[in-house]
Amino acid sequence: MLRVTQTKNTLLDGATIAEDLYTTPKDCEECFDSLELPGKNPTKLCPRSTFVRAGVLTTVRGSAYMEYGNTKVLAIVAPPHELMRASARRMNMGVINCFVNFAAFATGELESVPEREKHLGSMLTKALEPVVCRTEFLNFQLDIRVLILDDDGCLLSTAINCCGVALVECGISTYDLITASSACIYRDNVFLNPSAKEEELLRKHRGGHALAGSDNSSPTAALQEHGLITTASMDTFEQVAQCQQGGYLSPATYVKLLDYTLTINKSLRQIIRRVLTARVKEQHELDVREKAESALEDQRLAEIIERLKQQGLDDFIQTNIKEDPFVKR
Amino acid sequence: MSSEGDEDTIVCLPGERLCRIEDNVVLGIGTYEQNGYIYASKSGVVNIEESGENCQVVSVHKPGFHLTIPATGDVVTARVLVTTPKFAKCAIFCVRNVLLESSYRGLLRKEDVRETEKDRVDIYKSFKPGDVILARVINQMEQSFLLTTAETELGVVVAYASDARKTRVPMVPVGWSEMQCPLTTIKEPRKVAKVLPESTINTINAQ
Image 1 (cartoon, rainbow over the protein chains, first blue to last red):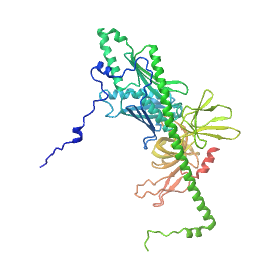
Image 2 (cartoon, rainbow over the protein chains, first blue to last red):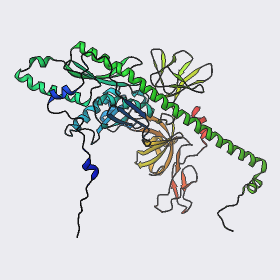
Image 3 (spheres, chains in turn brown, purple):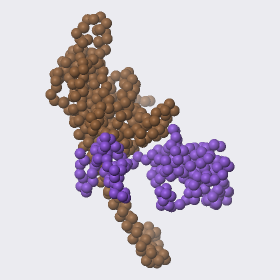
Image 4 (cartoon, rainbow over the protein chains, first blue to last red):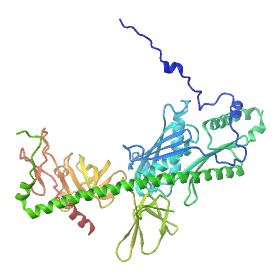
């Protein structure tokens, strides 16, 4: 007879599961109050702790991992291969395909995941197209895969940063380094690098608007500026690779937010430059060491050949016979 | 912008300005031109080579992994996958002396099998699926590379007799259009390559 003895899992029973970090409570007001309000003109750029590393995976050539605050993203670039779809071949440039995937534990709501993945993928493709020298791999497609391990806002910008590093790591020609960041405005407060909570609030606000607008209950709220912009820039030529904007913004606010994001991009660029330079140096040292080793090996072989020439074949064989230590007499 | 290393190595990143364009400066690998300046398009070590008549080639060498894509004129090693009356499909797995990570598709048309008597070529008498061939890339088509073996040095290098046996012994070339199995002494028609050392192929390439 099978007897099931239920043992108490002390670890699980004792621990309390932390309050879900990334979902907003139903009450928007309460949530808004709990936030730290940066005001209309934020003075500090509220930088997030950033961690970038190139070449994290050994099985793939171009890979990069990036942590931006709590947002964690892994990007993989495979070497270009032939076009899969026949329809894509009418272009006379290389094709870039981006595939974004959420890890199962990355986000709270699972319903909207496929839609968001698709949207992020297409936005990422648009952002990376100006950077890659697409003329260099004509009739080829470049597959970029992004895995989102944790989502705490700034998802698109972090993914762009991470892909930029992975592209360079893979050795694909790019015109410049690409950096991206986002900013949003909500109730006269400018949030730089908005967290998941703030982005969610914004989304709720927009959703609520459609309802509120229909019965004209809050005409003033409808005019209030709200919106999120994500800017990807290439700083060598002061070019903007992509600027995505959602919501309602007046031109002046738009320019202001754009300036904020460009400033953050500049600071991010410094970090990425440092990381990549260190990476190149590291690999260069490895290369030099490898070369030295192979030169040593060549030298050794050359010496043996020299000896062979001097001694003649038979002599050489006789002098080089060694007793096998494992053979018993 | 570029940071100096220990032994005079200049590390550069994409988008870094390297030098001004002049008449005697040539763009090498990993660089591009914009507004009269040469910029780096890869991360790596800057290399400046003198190449005759006071001409300088500026290139960026990326340490570690190199991305290789077959280019027109390259000698590639490929495996024959399918043979049809008009063409043979191949999988390119090696370019020059670089082993690829993923294979590229290659197409060898009937007209490109040999130099002479092009109209009498029979694909089935030249290649069999599974053969390893040396070929030269002549064009890049939309979904595959166009290959040619119309040179004495190009053609089948490794082939096995088509009767299925457990001992896989490669056949030995006997003549320019025949190979023989050393075990069963069966002769099979192939477009045999006259394999040369690599150095000679390179000199032919340069001519």
